[in-house]
Image (tube, rainbow, N blue to C red; front, side, top):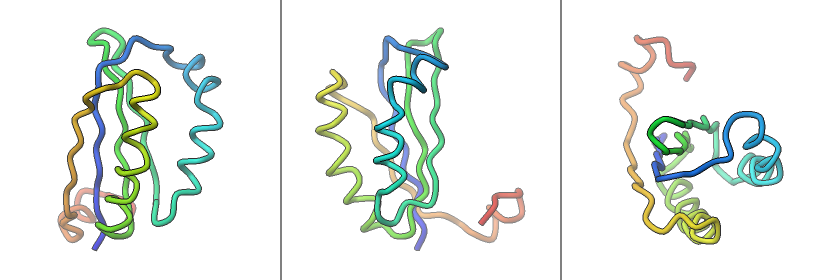
Length: 100
């Protein structure tokens, strides 16, 4: 069952192109994560927040990623990320044009 995973946390930057440069190696590592279908990177400069939305093949792959990523975020100074996991409703998602 495909699983949507969401991280949301306070963030002071860098933003945009500077974040892209700073996180290129991290992005490559995330892309190689077993069971990952895709990740969207989000940033809200005015609110000082950042995060990501991930789609995994299975709940187990999503859970394994949380175990890997939480300490990595802590190393970046992110102590208490909000983490949410959702089962997908594929028929409704396809109706609203999700590329699944």
